[in-house]
Length: 294
Image 1 (cartoon, rainbow, N blue to C red):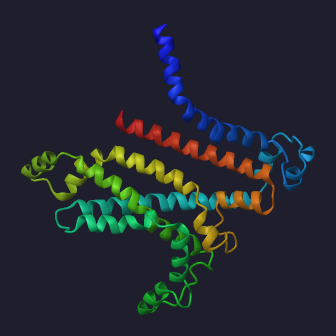
Image 2 (tube, one colour; image 1 turned 180 degrees about the vertical axis):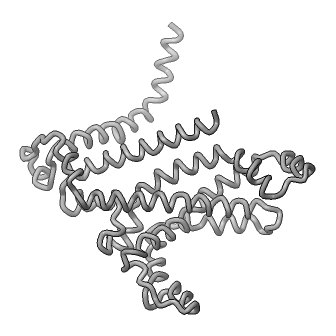
Image 3 (tube, rainbow, N blue to C red; image 1 turned 60 degrees about the vertical axis):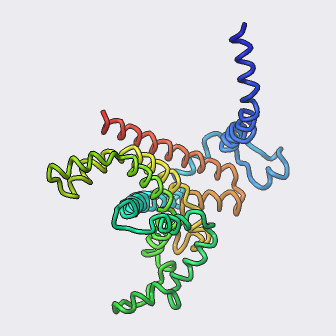
């Protein structure tokens, strides 16, 4: 009897949070899943009687949509290049700020973390001026090397790398803080023992730092992958998906289909395909992490 009363007491305390999850997550997700099997559009929004159940037609349409595969390719390009680059820059910055050679560590940590808390709209607008083909500071700097001005955001070859550089600069500070926390949890005695054995700095990094940073690296790789798959604000503000759809991401394409052309059913089907891609990537990383440790 006491256990039953305790159950209801626990349920009473959890009910506000459970209610929020139910009404703001579970119900909208289920509703979106149902919409993905319909032809929900602007006409259905005005009159639900126009709504038709079309089964898997939206999902089958994706496999015939060249623009979807273009957006998919761009997104994977961004994730597979920008993700590892962001983690490497974060790790390098963490190692630098954790070393004994650097002074004013708290100041540098704050400076490096400022882009993370700065709104992406402001950052993207500033970087558009940096990338300006005529007045941008980047072209001004490379002119000293004898390189002609580059249309960073107007050339299909350079547009995505330009956005990757922006995203890495914007986000590396968060992972840097995580890596610093991981480095500070490594016992100093291990490095001292390695030094007594005559180990080089590279050997200490390879045999002590990297293995003991594995949990932190795994966590940062997961959250970076999930965040980078949801690329939207950078191309939306800077290029609108151009030029020639070279920066069109899955989320931006989903936004265009849903809120520009009002193909809500088709847009939601794109969202669930992206969810399955992110879920698959996460499962693969979990299995890879377990294989390394066991």
